[in-house]
Length: 254
Image (tube, rainbow, N blue to C red; front, side, top):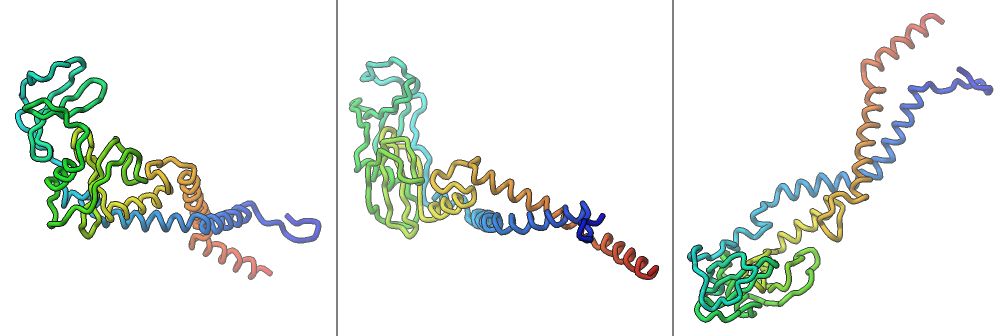
C-alpha cells in the first residue's frame, strides 16, 4: 500500500518491530540502572555470611535457664493473669521472670522477691559481657533507648544499647524488662541493611517489598524482556535468510 505522496507505508510487522525497538531502548535506559543494582546487591548479599551479619560468631543468645519446674515463690502474692514463671540467670544472679497475660514481663530477685525491672546500666553491661564470645574487647558505651534507632533497632522499648570497641563496631540491644538480647548490630549488618534497601528500593524503612517504585521497575523490566522477544523474533537468522532469498528471486525477475 502506498500513500498519496507515493511512499510505501510500513507493514504492521515492521511497525511492531519499530515500536518494540523503541520501547526496548528507552526502558532499558530507564530500568537498566536499577536492574544493575538488583544484580549487584543480590550478589553482595549472597557473598556475605548471614552468621556474620547477625553477629552470631561473637554473640551468644542462649538463655541461661535453671529449673523449669520452679514452684511459685512465697513472696509472689499477686497471681492474677499469671502466664509463666521462669528461673533464669541474669547478669550473674538468679532471678524469677514473671510473665502475665497483658504481655508484661517483670524480673524479681529469686530470694527476696525484690523487683529489679527495669534493669540498670550495670546489669546491661554484665549481660552484654557474658553474651560476648568474640575476641576480648572493652565495652565502649551503654545507652537506654526508648525510640527507634534509624533502621538499626525498632523495639521493643525501653532497651539498653551496649556498644563494644571491636573492629566491627558491634552493638547489642537488651530488653530492659527481661534482660533478653533483642538484636546485635555491626558495621557488617549496617552495610547489608544499606544494600538490602537498594535491592528492594526502600530507602527508609527496609521492610516494604511492595512499594510503587519496586512495582513500576518490575513492570518495566518485564516489558523490556517482552520487547526483546519481539525484536528477537523479527531478527531471527532463519527469517532473515528467507528475506534475502526472496529479494534475490525478485531481483532476478527484473
